[in-house]
Image 1 (cartoon, rainbow, N blue to C red):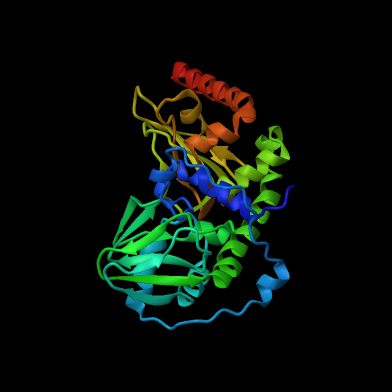
Image 2 (image 1 turned 30 degrees about the horizontal axis):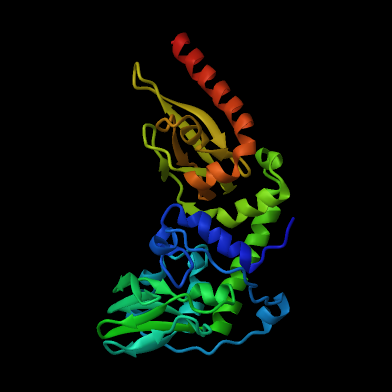
Length: 326
C-alpha cells in the first residue's frame, strides 16, 4: 500500500472537514478557503521514523486547570483525534503559554511558520491581503498548514483583545503530532486491506479511506444509532462485537437481525438509499469502530456500492419474510 505522507494527512483533513469544516488544517478557516482559494503546490517536511523516535521535546509543566482548558480547545481538531490520554498529555505538556496584548501581531502572512497555536482566551482576527476573513473568539487553533505543508503563512493573525495562546513549536509539532498520525494511518492501511468489502477499492482508494476514517469507542450496551435515526455515518468494526436489532412495526417485538464482528461494516443502507436507519445497533462488548462521514463515503466507497446494495436487498427480503411469517 502507498506510504502515508504529510500530504495524505492534509487530504485526510479535507475529508474530515466535510463534516465540520472549522477544523481544517489551515492558517485560514475553511469558511474562507471554500470560496475557491487554491493552495500552492509545495512539499511537506519529511521526518523519518528514527528521527521521530529519537526526538526529545521541551516540556512545560502545567496546572490541572490549564491542561483541562487546552484539552477542551483541541478536542475537535482532527490532529488530536485517536491520541491516547498519555499521548495527548505529552503534546499538551510541550505547549508554551503566550500572553498577548490587544493589537499584537501573532504571525504574518508570507513568513515561515514556527509555531502551531491553540486559542483559549481572547479574540483574534485572521487577515488575508488586508481583509479580515475569520475571527477566533476564545477557542480554535491556527498555524498548522504552514508546518504540515512546509509553506509560508497564508494569513496574518492579530489579537483584538488581551488573550492567551498555547504554542507548539515546529519540531515538536512534526515529531509528536504529524509522525503519530502517519504511524496510525499506516496501521489503518494494513488493517483495511483485510476488510473483505474493500476488495473493490484500489490501493490508492484504501489509502484515502485510511486518511478519512475517524476512530470511536463504545462501551458494552451503548447504542451506536437507533432505528429511525437519520444516517450520516458509516462504520467498520475494528475490535469487539455489536448486534443489529429490528423493532417490528406490527407488535413492537425486537428481533436480533445481525451480529457485527471485526472487519464487518454497518450503517451503509441509510447513506445509499437515503432513508432513516433500519436497525438499532448496540455494542455487545467494548467496541472500537472506524467511522466515515456521508460525503467521504460518497467520494471514496463508490466502487463498493453494488456489493453493499446486494446485502441491503438480502436484508430487506429477510425482514419482509419474517414479518409475513408472523
